[in-house]
Amino acid sequence: MNPYEENLKNLIEDHITEPTELSGVEDRFDKRFRKERRNSRIKISSAVTSLLVLFMFITANTD
Image (cartoon, rainbow, N blue to C red; front, top):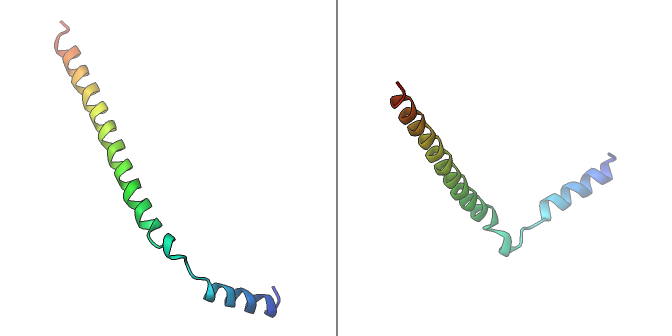
């Protein structure tokens, strides 16, 4: 890259501002994603627990 392009790129990066409407988007996305991950973990753990209980029930009743 020539010096003019580098200078122009640096000026653009320095003067780009984020619109106020987008200021909290990352925070809102993180909160929502955390909630979805938590719900997903709860579903997975309850499925694993159910399978474990079912396995224990089946093995306890076999003779």
